Length: 308
Image 1 (cartoon, one colour):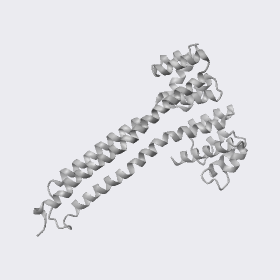
Image 2 (cartoon, rainbow, N blue to C red; image 1 turned 180 degrees about the vertical axis):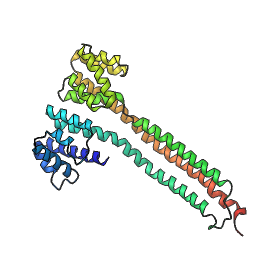
Image 3 (cartoon, helix red, strand yellow; image 1 turned 120 degrees about the horizontal axis):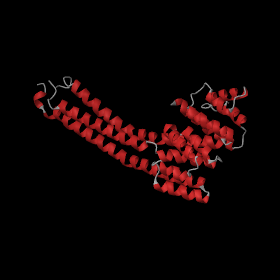
Image 4 (cartoon, rainbow, N blue to C red; image 1 turned 60 degrees about the horizontal axis):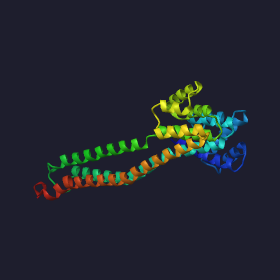
């Protein structure tokens, strides 16, 4: 995880320097200076390999400082050859940052409830374990069933909560196809080359899908018809692509489809964070209430267990 963060920070800084008009080697020289602490070692290694005759993508792949995903190396290699490295670095950083954004928000929303759960749970255990020091002869009989019930409740709720969170954060297959496709088309790649790059950067599902689409295109099957035959894409997306083929505006249409899918995904994640956090806090409140009623209250009301 640390290697990935370092590499994404390196891509972000390098993209900024390239957008400012600096040549690639000059940008790497700047990143290799001590002031750029996060990217310094990686930039040094990449620059040293480039001085030995390696291309930028090859230098990134074999840098030895951080481990870089082979998929990302393949995308950088394609951009390196096409001359749109700056745009590709932006695509990589934006795509990877979007994936981690929801996770960061989810972790942030769970910190306070988790602290309350642990504090209440360990506080109850301490009370039960040290009841003799507090003046009690033994633990009231209703304590253990109540404690187990409260723990089971919060564990089951947590499992359901994180299962829903995982489903919410699962990558939309249509978005993972159209988003890179629209980007590669806008970079000037033709449809076949763009599909080849999508197959490289989109995992096994996209690789299989793109392979079938490329095979159909080679046989002269229209792109929109190929999409429809996959029984994978929405009717709206297929209809828009069919219109784009007639008007010759495939790039803009793919971008439109991708933006609609991305907006729908953002809204879905927003709703989960908006309603999931209050639900989690409410569940923790029920857990604390059950603990108080089943563990603390018996000690306060069961006077038969107190030493005289």
